[in-house]
Image (spheres, chains in turn yellow, purple, cyan, red):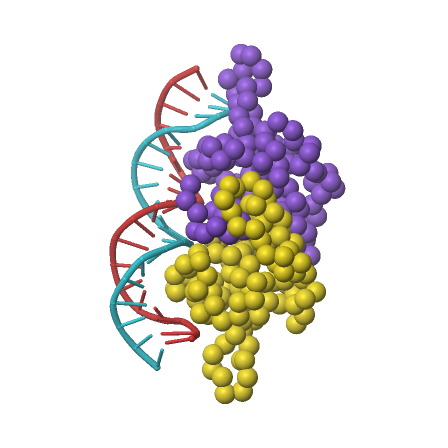
Length: 121
Length: 121
DNA sequence: CCGGATCCTTGTCGATACTG
DNA sequence: CAGTATCGACAAGGATCCGG
């Protein structure tokens, strides 16, 4: 990874500042765990972009792919504590969007109530 | 503007989710006001990108360009309340970066102490 | 010198079709 | 269902140029 500067904000954006990463993490906070969950999202991410982002996020240590159970080849994705650490930033963005962009949905209560500690390991 | 969905988070990212917008706003919170201030930033934004982003941010109502004084052609930029509303999100990102990316600088205290109300008008 | 605009190259995004 | 391959469109980046 190479960063634009040592600034923690700019560097955070170097990791999750693309068009989709934070939207994917938002979906995970809301309960999405599988590839198809992410595709069903109203934002309509393309399959190649989704696959690449999931790889990048895993490489960055924000999510991890776990076998749901023995015999299941299908991976399910989960937030790591590092990934869950972004929840406050997402909540702040959500509040800003609700208050400053007309016609947005309201973030569900369970989203605003989510805390990084809810995603251990 | 056309949004990917009605989600306030995704929509917020449709406005400021590109590579530079939040970095520019961060600089303004830290006191930058002029075009050359933004260029002096350690992230080394290209002049064409900077000019376009400033135009977009002004159009979106996040910043405004004011004549410093009568006779001064040089524009100086200031955050609107709408733009300043992003401060909590920036602070959350900064904290995350400090705690999760090795070797980052520490956000100056005056940055973490900044409040949207400090930017009226 | 400051605040850009222009040109051109490079990189990233995105739609769609296809595969194990 | 969970991806990969291909290819076109568009955004970002670097260098240079221009007007006040």
